[in-house]
Length: 507
Image (cartoon, rainbow, N blue to C red; front, side, top):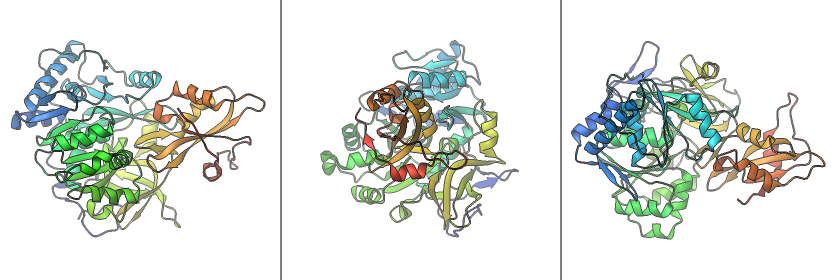
């Protein structure tokens, strides 16, 4: 077993063959495709007649058809003036077109900028302006088409995509991901799940604009001629029907969606014997839900993947053998990932989680200061507080006050900035409210301006014009006293969590 910083278990958990350290000490896989272009081309050559994409309620594409469509989109982009190194916005919902556009951008030599389809117009506009997107794929617009184009020569260190993640200052940060980031994560998925290296049928239930679906699911499935069955939206009944009708063997989702699935009357009649893998992540997983999944999918391996946008999806993985008894953990580092703790507390053992590996982003687009602060001496400072016990990573708190609402990340400062702009708000603090299904929901503690008429419903309606729907508070506590603060002026959010008297907001 490779000795890894912060690891105290001698028991090997994952396959660590074919791994080497570079001159900087970073681990890498030896045998990977040269690039994402190389991956798609080789898959099409080996599996031309197999179905690559199937959109629920839409059409399907074989691998030969996928390659042809991707090359025509690349040619259309080039004809529109897109050059190697340019950025291209991708604002499409889940579907075959998303995948074709994604790889079309790559084949044109450009970098993909996926955009959360739930962003408001102003949020999306910021991402497009900050990235300098040369072209944007939008719903309702015809896909660009031109003479087939396949730009070769992208090295593993070439920029492949910029995924924007919510920023603690209210502005999203663009994590720059290389071809190697994608490919290393793909190989890690095969080793830690472990997925079979052959054609599979994988059901996409989460948005493709997230790293989970795009990197940890889309790319591994296409590597060996598998079929991506794409659910256009979070339709629970369509999900159950898709498993029944498409010989699905792999399902990837967030805990909240699994919770919904298991309580549907139709699920009781579903034959789950063909499902081999039930994978989850993106939010805290209740221990009882893990056991319910194991019972509901008795032929499947379950597993929890943890990572950040900055780690191109998974950095740690909790395998089936540990999932039932260690649901509080996010698992062991994947084979090429090293973890450690920054300034651990001598009493609790908790410190900021550090991650190093070939899956770690190149930095933040247009943010040199944030890059210097976050990526230090090859280590990513995650902002998550964690403990490491017998090799298992346990996240204990979020240093940056992030709220995880059913797999969607919400940073409190971003919401606070919007609410503070509403007339009548004197002070505001945003915190996570525990929720059985979603993990957390957004709660706002508001101190109104004395003597001013204050309407909670109007404030929430105002927020809905400025924020994506999942960021809008669903709980509000109107507090007449000022917010409690420490000597340095920082709001004491733990005290607010303990004292909160929430009023649920009905949209």
